[in-house]
Length: 213
Image 1 (cartoon, rainbow, N blue to C red):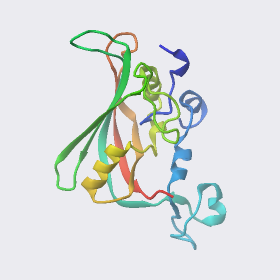
Image 2 (tube, rainbow, N blue to C red):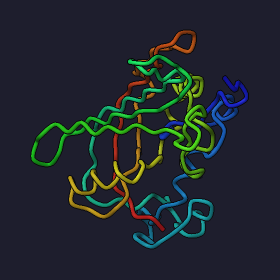
Image 3 (tube, helix red, strand yellow):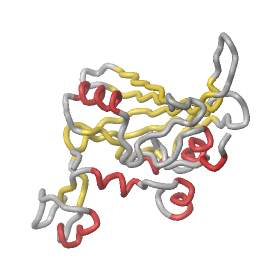
Image 4 (cartoon, one colour):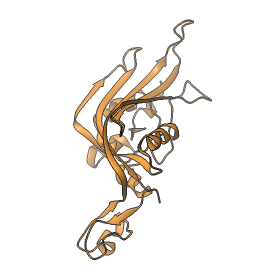
């Protein structure tokens, strides 16, 4: 294993301040949210576009917040990282993969299980990667282990295209779904970095649809 790549901003694909930021790398949630439209929450410029960096000028007596569209939804996100993907029939444990499972309730009340698996297809022995504005470093089991101690670093991460499109279809919107909140106090983590099983991180999330810049 390449131990130089064993930490992550994951988490999402995907922390906040102090030692957490040093462990997780970049981008941070505040950087990710810069990809989306912001409006003044109140004050004399309520509803006008703004940026967080200049909110004191843009939004006097108020705050600059991400523009949300449509419903907020709660769900459970499970991330499975496996550094020894096994060929059950023929043997061999050299490849790596990352799987995600998002459990949400659709507007019609039905329970939706949305899952996908990611891999570096060109070089499957390498850990999978994501666009740099979502997760800046490779996603292996050691990265997932570090993410478990700082799940807040996943805020404002957005899903890969297929999962994004499915959420948009379910909720009838073209806006981008992002993780706006995660439960940092209650999560489950199964650490299997020392054996041939996959490591698993599971926690509650809140998703909001937002408008990209």
